[in-house]
Length: 373
Image (cartoon, rainbow, N blue to C red; front, side):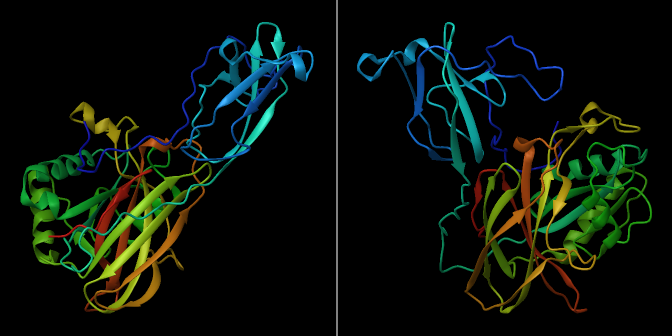
C-alpha cells in the first residue's frame, strides 16, 4: 500500500517479448546470435529513429534483385543485444543504438543497426498565463532506514494526514540514511540528511531548516507535522513550477519552467525519487511498511554540500525562467518506470538562507502544469 499522494507513474522501460529458448554463453555476456545464412535481407523504415515513434521492418528473400519477394509475414525479428523477439512495428522507448536480425526457418539475415535519438522534454502549455496565484506546498523529509526500529512510526504519521487538509499542503521525500544495506538508500540520501543536521533516526524535517519532533506515537508525530505546516503555509506561493520529464538510456532529462509571483532571486534543484522498493522494515507493524516510496536516489543543485539548488538569478514578478536539467547517472538497480522527479524552488528567508519556496512532482515521461489556486 503506497503511503504517498503522488501521481501514477508512466512506464519508461523497453519491453520485449521473449520467444527463444537459447541461453547465454559461458562468458556471461549474453547469448550469441546465429551467423547470417540463406538469402534474407532485413531493412527498416528509418536508419535514424526517434523515441516513441514506430519503426517498421521489411524482410525480402531471393537469389537476386529480380527474384526478391516480401516474406516479412513469415519472419521473426530479434534484438541482437537481448536475443529476444520484437514486435513489428517496433517502438523504442529509450535512446541508443539498436541492432536487429530476421529469422525464417534456417535462414538468418545480416544484422542492421538503427540509431534512436534522445527525446527532448516539452513543457505543457500554461493553462492561465496571466496568473501568479500559485498553490503552495512545503517539503517534508523523513530521514529513515529499513534497519531503524522506530521509523515505522513516521510512516504511519504521514499516512494519518491523507484525509486532512494538510494532505495538499506538502510533498514528502524519504532520505534512507540509517543503514547502507537498505535497498532504498543512496549516497545522495546521506547528503540530504547531513545537510539537514540529522543525528538520530527517525528525524523529520520541514523544508530545509525546520526541525519536527518525531515523538513516540504516530498521532503525536502527525500533530507536530501539522503544527509546522500551519506555520509555513501560504495561501499564495511566491513562485510556480511547471515541468516535463523524459527517461533516457543513461539519464533523466527534465524541462523546468519557473514563473515568479514575487521579484526575488531563486534557486532550483531536481530530486530523482523512486517508488515501490521492497525492503524488510525493522518493527514494521503492517505489510505496506516494507514497500518504500519517494526514496531519494539522485539530487541536483549541490554546491559545497549546500543542497538548496543552483541560482537562476532574479526572476521578476510575472516573468518566467526555463531550462533543461539532466540527472545522471542512473543506478543499475533503480527501476526506471518507478521514478519521478521532485522540482524544488528555493528563495532567501528572513535569515538570508535559501529555503523551500515551492515544490512540484513530475512523473517520469510525463508533465506537470502550474498548480493554480
